[in-house]
Image (cartoon, rainbow, N blue to C red; front, side):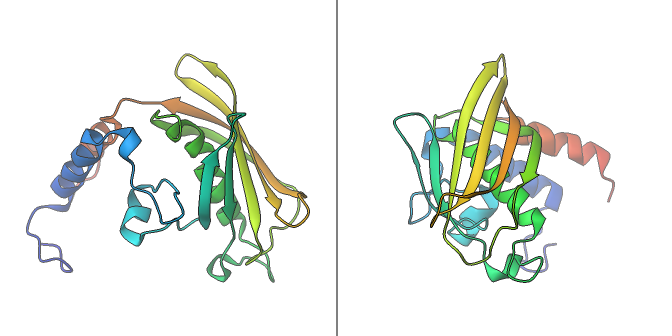
Length: 181
């Protein structure tokens, strides 16, 4: 039994049910934040992007342009973002390159370059673009820059892998076979 909800459905079965519900949704109907940001599964419950992305759009050149900032909760060094936040934000940016085109893909690899310490609570601009494709692989580039000057503070290269809509259902079933209660 789930101590918070009182639900007696086993957690593993709830995960499969949630994954099936997600798989049945149209990738074009992904819930969005008030600023129009496509929300991942966890952020849907929060009502906003926990990576600090507040707006996003796909420009005429096919570049995803996002406004974001790192909150003080993700401070690593004095007044700078934790490297994990920076990597997570870049992962979110690269993921939206396919999502905003109506394609479902997951991160296969993510290579992060930390150019300068990323300041917290400062307006930033994220950019992500598709560089090329090879079968199911989508090669993506991304950057985070200071909104005030355009100085790049972090960048990434990623390989996104397009998946079928039942990807998470298959994963939950596999995980159930691996994790013993």
